[in-house]
Length: 172
Image (cartoon, rainbow, N blue to C red; front, side, top):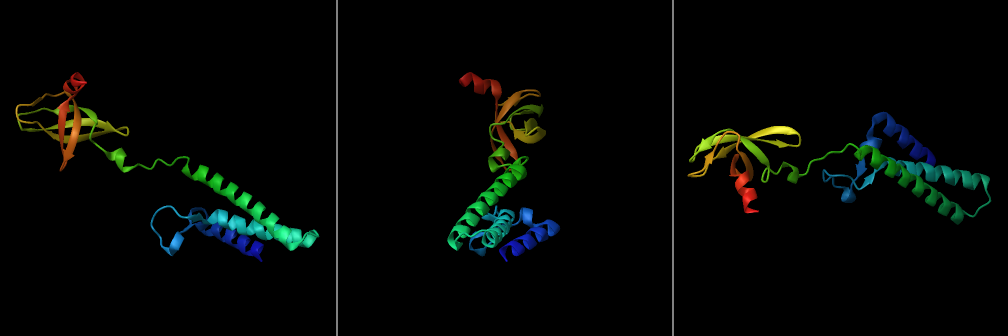
């Protein structure tokens, strides 16, 4: 019975597509994150457990306890193998970004629109291979000329506080 149920679930998952991406969540609550138990390895476990159980009880003279033990070990090994293969295939090209990847403080760039003595200018910098721009405000008495290399110190309401790169490296 386990074999037929597992096989039916595997075929249904292949047709409807829920077997590869579905997960069971602990406590029955969908937290929106990765699941607790992937469905496909669980379905493989049930199918293999049922199939090996049927073969050993039908064609061998083993005791029921030995058959259950062999079926469980075999199904666990194949289920874990399926999970490992899926984990490698599904996460190979995963380039999920973390919040720290969006951090602008510490980015090195250059001034594209000059600003001096409290005026607003613009700087350009590269973040993950993409050219970005952000507004900068020159502090009182500070001159930010076009082409000056600057480092973002902090960003407040879309406006960056910067310092000249040469001044920063001179202090090291």
